[in-house]
Length: 63
Image (cartoon, rainbow, N blue to C red; front, side, top):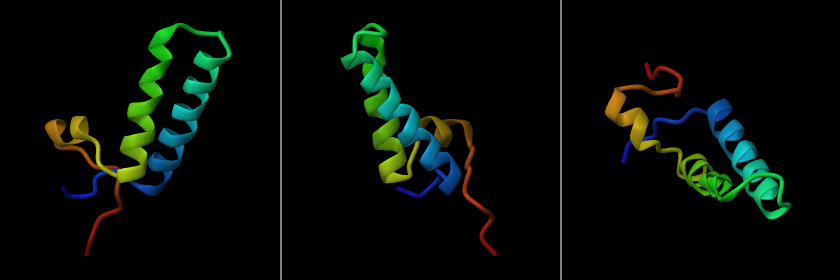
């Protein structure tokens, strides 16, 4: 697996993922908030399968 999630993208994914899970546990949103687990995993492993399918990367360019 090649890394395709950059630093800023990684932080945002993890924070939004935690917020979604917290909102689900708090009863503010429905079960769809568990999608936050996917965001946390893609941020942790720095790999997003959707980015790969679309040929995208948020990593800085390598020289």
